[in-house]
Image 1: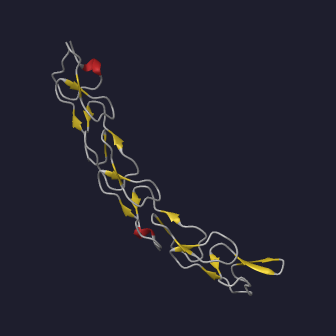
Image 2 (image 1 turned 135 degrees about the horizontal axis):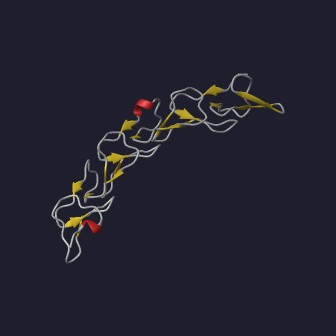
Image 3 (image 1 turned 90 degrees about the horizontal axis):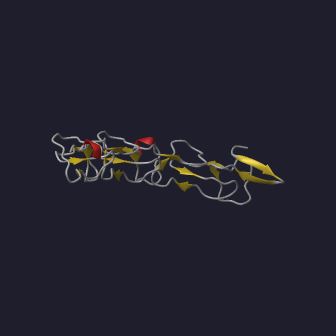
Length: 171
C-alpha cells in the first residue's frame, strides 16, 4: 500500500504521491517525479517546482529553496545544480529567481553573496552593483554605508582621504 492512507474504505494518496482516479485502488498511488511536488492528501496532480526551487527526489511533498547567494529561473528543476551563484556586485535571498544589485552605499566583492556589505566609514559608493567603495576625497567625509561623500562644514577642512565622521574635518 505504497503512498496511501486508509480512510473509512477510501484510500488517500499521501503528499508527494498522486492518482488521477478518485476511487484509488491499493498500490495505485504513484510518486511525483523529480522536479515536481504535491502537498495534499488524496487525488490530484503533481505540480512543477516554481522558479527559485528544485527537488531532486521522487515523491516530494515540497520543493527546496535555492540557497541565498544563488538564483534559478528554471521551472520544474530537478537538481540544486540549476541554482546559479550570483556574480560580484549582486546578491540574493533563498528561493530567488534573480540576483539583486548591491545598492548605492554598499558593495560585494565575491560571488554567491547573500547580502551586500556597507561601505566602511571614510568610504562611499554612489553606484549600485559595485565591487568596492571609493575613499572620501580631501575636504569631504563619509559615515559608514554612505552613498555620497559630504563636504566638511564651513570653516573646516580635511587634507587627507578617508575622513570618517564630521569631527574628522579640522578647523
